[in-house]
Amino acid sequence: MRMADDFIWSLKYRPRAIEDVVLPEKLKKQFSNLIKKGKIGNILLSGRAGTGKTTSAFILGDTIDADVMYMNLSDETGVEGIRTKVRQFVSSASFGGKKKVFIGDEADRLSNNAQDLLKAEIESFSKNCSFIFTTNHQNRIIEPLKSRMQEIDFGVYTKKELSQAKREFYKSLIMILKKEQVKYEKEAVAQLVNTFFPDMRKCLNETQHLSQQGDITLEVVNENVVSNIEDYFNLVKEKNFTGVRKYIANLSIDLNTFYSAMYKDCHKFLVVDSIPQFILLVAKYQYESSFSIDAEIPLMACSMELMSECEFR
Image 1 (cartoon, rainbow, N blue to C red):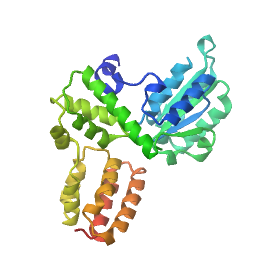
Image 2: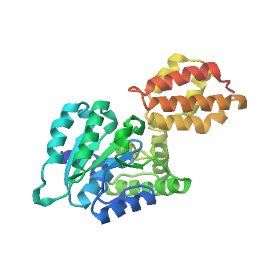
Image 3: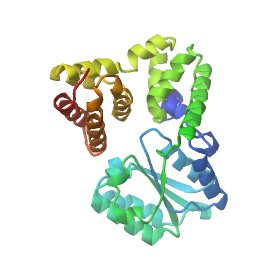
Image 4: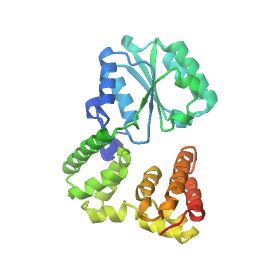
């Protein structure tokens, strides 16, 4: 595990203090206040992948010097793992009288029955243990469990906070490239940040992948990472089903990011009267993709409806 931590940038450069996590200042203050109190309660951290939820959970547990148990709940989707592993940890006394923190990652992957059992564990053992859960899909967490947690949303940025967070992450990425002795163009790094943010893990992984091929230039980033949205709209306009399917399969960016790119540039490719219908369809399928096992399918369905419902320039 140590070798992986040393090699994979997203692990090697994982922040060790709340002040170093790229988050809106209001969230940093909120976490800092919890740390000062020395008791963090029961928390549900929600937001897109790669936004720092799990990192923040570990920092909270480490900073208050707690006995921490981590479990990736996507590997324990049924009730048995909750009934045995979790209960054994939360019900027993910790060494040296330390506080206990249970971190359950990807809680949205649990069955409703398993979530219901966790609700019972929180009710029974909150005096002995704090529970922190992370989720990429808040709507998949049952209400009885959410009602027992303090919800903290990692996806809510004001325009000012978003700009500040991007600048902060850009500086961090430059620092990493310098430490790794990778040559880069500032414009290329900015393009990477603008393409992937707020998924900082994805951005680091893509940057590391590009660095293994040579210098990180704007030409390399545009060729390997940034999707040519014009190609997509042309394929949809031509009703080229096979071309659209191939385009979507080869996308290197997060599909939520692609929906945003579609929305941002739609006015360049659609007649004015079709833009409202286009936005309604994109909003519908972006929402539905959060429930889909294969996110390519809703995007393909969206593309089919765009072919029939919208008029392109």
